[in-house]
Image (tube, rainbow, N blue to C red; front, top):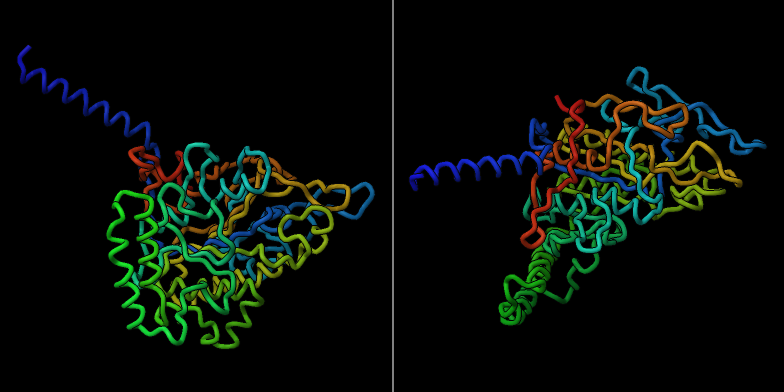
Length: 426
């Protein structure tokens, strides 16, 4: 065989092998829908929202009867979408159902434990002993960056943990967080006696030390994060946390502390933050939060009403500002709840079938997607895996769900073979 013929044949084999590998490794790369959303507000209902008591209601049960009767805790009501019903305590959100989709057939087969579920819904990956996977907020912040370079790409309103973190992407893909909407992020306000000139002198003193750090080291990642924090510190960034600048009637429309967090999320989106997570599990107004075991179920309606007020206000506010189509609002929780009640009238954990929600973001909304059985326990039509849910969020932002990141030299797709819900695009 001539040398030229050999090279042509082996080159063809190599190209075919690479094409085959790409097709196998990236099944979602074919005909991936491309949305035009620019931001994400990710509302986290820590504890496990009961889908049968909120976005996937069924026939009434009775938690106080003897024996207890399985079913929804509350009555269901019509929404703006014909044939789609929500819980009676979501009446404000029900009027906006044509701007959102309750994905009722999300499921996973993990041990129904809070830490596992929280990590899985945030990262789309099972916990691994060798890899710490990044959260969806870190992935989106890393891939798309901030809309405005004067603000962070990823912010968290709530307590930090590894499930919300950057994983193998390192500190440069981390978040800025706060737990108090009044004061904003800790450490970003300069003391009154520290002028811009003093800050500049401190940075000059620090520079010779940071210059010695090897570029490919872990410490270099923290150096970059520190540099970003120093850049953001000061009044230009902190002004975005001045909720008192908003009209009183708007602040009142958002409701209590959780609503004020959602209002702050809107301000941060307008400032150019790409991804904002808002946690709702800090205010246990029913005694247990969304983890409605035992007596926590009896006052669950207080949580649902608070969610209804804040969510409807956020959607309406974003729409009035002309940015609802550019902002994807996500409701996440680690698992759902069974229709059956426990001995004291609460509900256990259920990962086999639960609801997550999407609103705005320019999607083709339909009020609800997927069909469950008469007790919202099993999927009947259109199952959606957690990686599929992640893939839908990525696609809404114009990100290919098969896009690869690198843990060292190892390529890792941003979803675990997730496929977007194509019915939401068009």
